[in-house]
Length: 227
Image (cartoon, rainbow, N blue to C red; front, side, top):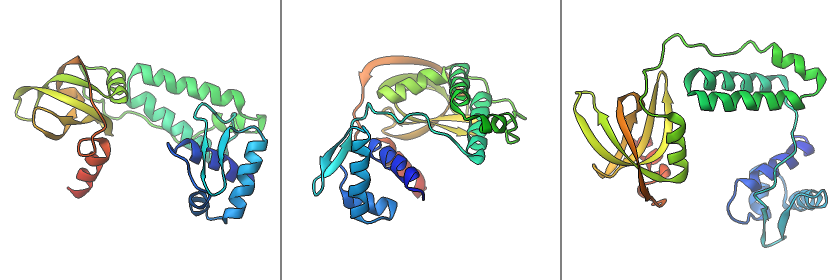
């Protein structure tokens, strides 16, 4: 890995951590020695990256710091283009607009030699099967997940039985062509997957939930992995 690439990745690594990270942890992550970590951190700090801490204690970065735009190679652009195509095909209008906006920003910072690569992307997504219609907003559900806000839904199961559930929404999962909402169902006191096309109505509750270890997304993923 080039040193310039490693420095960028170290910044991203620090931004993804809530607590201070030791030089040893960084060294293990990037398979380098701690002396190299000290040198890299020092160079980043000298260049203006807001990292605080010291050797033997740990390092933390100001989460408000963002890297300036960086370039991409042809395959990275291919992956970005495919992802944006899939977002536009399989989500809602609001998220699709954000995807197009992101693509526009990427185009604006690409060097001239890569502008043509973006126009010649030959890997993309099309819909050969329309997703089932929703009565709820995908973007609103994303907000509830992000804010950890409880919701009350009317849900129809496979047997067409209608129930009312109070749910802690934890994640939205795409299982082509169906979207699922993973959540902790307070009505059933267990994790459940709800198909968006079977949610008949949704009411936002004036209640928020904590990140409880036995009812959060990590616990849900562990449960799914064991099934």
